[in-house]
Length: 259
Image 1 (tube, rainbow, N blue to C red):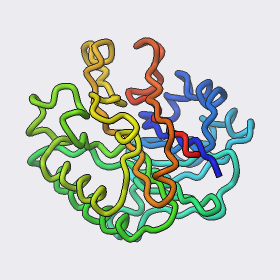
Image 2 (image 1 turned 90 degrees about the vertical axis):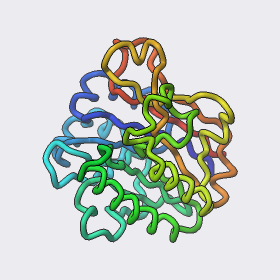
Image 3 (image 1 turned 30 degrees about the horizontal axis):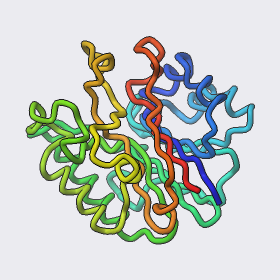
């Protein structure tokens, strides 16, 4: 079965809905949309997305325990057969950072990895999360894609100013090696596979300065697939806004067609 799967960090669903997310949902051809950094309760999320839900979108939501932080969701054209929040972690399952849903033989997950901060407890927390998440993902089999904001630029091609970020969270050696481990375990970075050897395509740009206008971005929003699904990824695009004032998040949707 063919799928179009999109993934986007909305940087607060209530704000995004008011800036253009609803119009994007009305226009997209995606079958499934993985959403990160919802930063709202389930009730608030459903209220913000009410027009989309009334139009037929189905919402699975992992509400964060910390008010105003994290939160992931999956929007789909049809109701999934099953939904699971978390991956069996006593520390992180209530944090609103992982959600997966089954659509027939295909499982789609939405993930939001911590941003971290080098040399601080925030980075230690990120590493604990990565260790548990990685252990879980390596046990997954079958048709599976995990999409989201990983807050890791894997290689020098994945951020514009890599030389200036060698000691920054998001480009640290241990973080990049963690991505290496997932690829060695059989996952495929489908966007990079479809765009080999090029800078980007970036999916996040700071709101500060002229980062967006100059395309000084980071590629930190990935779709990692395994099983036959990975070989069925035929087209990938980052839906970068035409202009700064047309953005409804500091991230752009990453959309992949699986045929």
